Image (cartoon, rainbow, N blue to C red; front, side, top):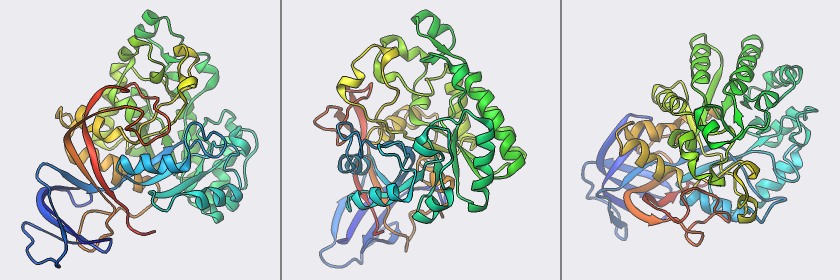
Length: 420
């Protein structure tokens, strides 16, 4: 990369606890220097005024969905890569629920060979079960050898015996297993978190115990078997308590919630916007507060995007009939910044840690920071830039978001990705 000098940019480095303004010199895909004032740089170095801008480590997404292969009308590898870069992500980890599914080494080979060279670094969750159907276990060792970063279906395992066997077979591989605690029978036909809001809105309710009973079973299995597990899509206050207790006992678990569950709750469903139909459903205000506090305290390690693109036709239906999921790669950072940092609920370092450093830890990677000699995996963010979300502006092929046609504040200016 050509040399660049950012003058008096706000450097956020959760690895080293740094939040201060400095000059930052980048050259040849490496952070060369960070000091109060840099004067000695090579001729031809591009100089940018960083006043009011934020420079931090590239964001890392733990799990999202691709349309391609099988549903290119929702998202292609190319549009997905562009959306990730536009949102500040230098690493993207995809769930295996494409068509065909990533349940064999062939799927991993295909995905990596079709990923754009200009995109972020791509990681793939290898499927736990054939066709992510929750019936027959895949060849986990073959998937690991082919390069799977870990194992996940993206769907809850409903058979406790299969859950036990999966954890036993995955144990010697020592790769993360990402699991979503959800009992489909208890969930029933629910599309909103059970409570006063769901009753008033006339929406079928999903009880919180649909998540917590499944999570309790999972944690008991982890306590017995010892396989490292990442708990996906935490959405209830009680789940935060269960995870806190498990961590206090030393269980090898990490956990994440999605960005949307931190920003919204059941009271936001009054519009019946089908783009608010997600799984697990948005929690109550008490759930939302517990998740916000859980991330701040570290009980919930990371924030996942769970980017789930759907076409206009798929989402333009009644709320209860809409497929669950929203896009988020391009919107998560500015909306989280406005909702949690600008409102002074969190420090800027808390947010950046949950979006960059902690996801790396969950993926068993060595975390990186903004330090001299480190690779230039970075994102430059303007927290004051206002822009309107339109299909034409978004890089994603789909635009299923409740913020469509709204003006939001905060935008990624540039994302640097070091060579792979």
